[in-house]
Length: 178
View 1: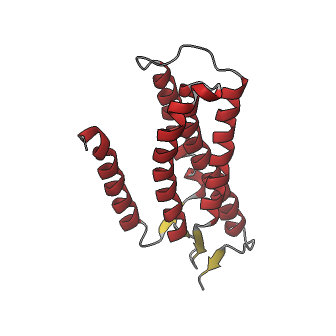
View 2: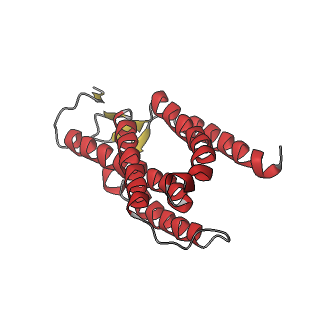
């Protein structure tokens, strides 16, 4: 196995270790700042998508309808995964009015499955894209758009629940600490 093949697995393993250690205890949730991560990540993903089109050997052909469909599918599936992951996050309202959030272990398993699923699907889909009449760049970009959908919809779902609880509402996913 070459370093180009095993370095991503080592990086993912280290990132997961850090994420798991950070999520052991609930963290303060400030709904007014949930927009920050998407505001940073969406432009970076846009640059990444633009960069994949400038990769040597990448197709310069404009996307066809099927390619846009693949991108839309990636966005929708990412949104569904993000909404589900957001629902798996436990939000607690404490006596002082502060909100605490803790990521669910199931949400962490989802991320691991998605990371390895992306590798497996990418290895299968990208070489076969031309045979199916798709642009290989669009297939690769669909995985990036999936991440964008996941991040945005997770934050939207958490924002909706957090505001509801903050304003005295109830939510089946929120635990109130008294």
